Image (tube, rainbow, N blue to C red):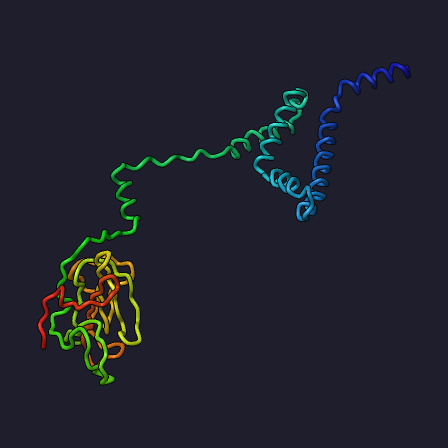
Length: 270
């Protein structure tokens, strides 16, 4: 009777599988081992040892939560296929249903590719984004930058402030404060500044060799780099810097050397 009970007990033990319990125990041990390894590797990864790069890479890979979830879910599916007895457990089946839903959530999203824009529209966007360029011509025709008469010509003169003879590197054109000053030819604004003598002044390049200079301005309406057309308003007449009254000092430079503007523009003298 006793041996029969033993046999019966043995038979009963074989019938009731301990594999789920072993799986849980093994999983707990694996989690403990992984946690321990992580805690050991973390401080090492912050040092300058030879294995620092390897440890850091391992921790980086292991810290990818989404990838870890995918591997864990795949492992659960493989366990279910390998141990059909797990399918008889209600809790395990509920867990696997959760795994299937989680798999759908963590699948990478398929981003829609934007439709290619028409070629003409793309080229138009490129044209708007590109900086405006100015192709310097070989020569230009100049116009008066201000409607007024010349009060002081180019060359040697008596300085109106110091009273001493001094070179005048441009012409003074009479005007009232606020009168519009325009460009004498199309070009690019290459300098805008406040000078001790010339006050608010602008330098424009028209060709590879020719530049024009506008000084004593009360206001400036352009900035360095601007492309300006002929007759574009760039400032207003003033008396900034060293000046006895409102007027425009206008100069022309050829190869950066001051040149008499009257060689290029017909002017009236007061």
